[in-house]
Image 1 (cartoon, one colour):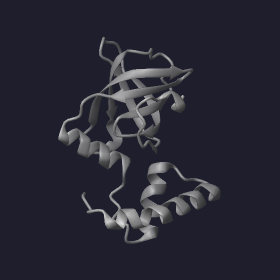
Image 2: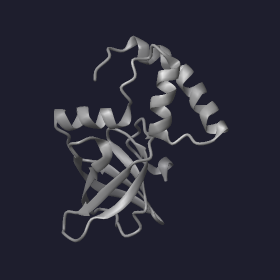
Image 3: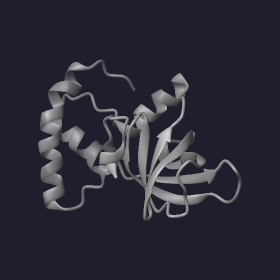
Image 4: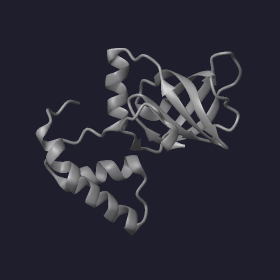
Length: 149
């Protein structure tokens, strides 16, 4: 499904529980993200969504203050869906960045590994090794950006 997304962007593998509610009404359904970006996200468990539907996605576990975003279903395959995120306020964009990227300053690789393992669900040795390799590539970039948390 990713190859069909016209608006190329950086999507980060991120497994999060979200609540999805159709704007047309009805009960909210629980889904799980598997990739999230600033322009869109992929959901698993969204079999009842249809292309073109307007929905509200709420990242309830993101913090004490839930983050709700207006989205449009752009593509569906089985129980998976790609949602394009609507216009974001500066506050929503900042909160979404905090959901996607951990508050890691890049100074200590072990700190980054601990933060990222929780966010990305590393549970096996191969996943930990891949994550360690990824963080060693990211570390110089993260360390050179202005830390904002």
